[in-house]
Length: 199
Image (cartoon, rainbow, N blue to C red; front, side, top):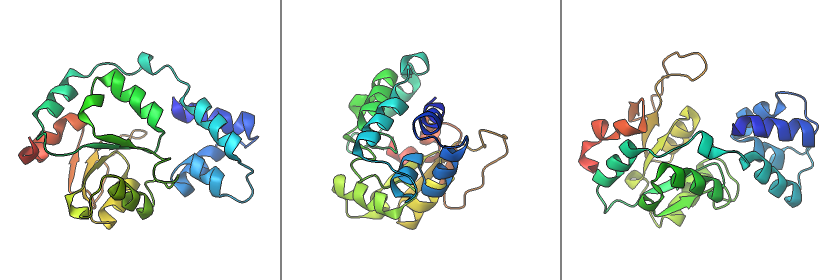
């Protein structure tokens, strides 16, 4: 959904050719970061807010609902372990998703793209910023779960422990190989299978 909204904003509002939004995503980690960094693209603060509103103006309730299995898993997790949502999106969008899933109360905070000064998870700076927000100075104490191989690779580079969520490519179905992932699972709900000591 968001991908289509981003594409429509870029083509309709920014007059980009079809597919250019995806090219920016591949180069910069997010289309937004690409629009902020590419010198040939005029993208001011007003356009930033317009983009964020447009991209996240979607009927989430039609696609996301309560996840009792996820709730049960988080309830079993060691409550002394602080948990954060680290997202390339914005906080209000993540809050809506967590509320619909019924899991928002399990998390200390949401570290969104604004909080890390718009740097993407393809960049080591984002992880350093996230650690500062979480008041953690030991990279090895951070456990990162993500469905992006690029993000997992970067997290591993800064010393985080890593779990790749999703073992097959969405488009072609072929198996994903990611040597930087300490563990790989099909679904987030399988986390206890590979890290049982956290539960």
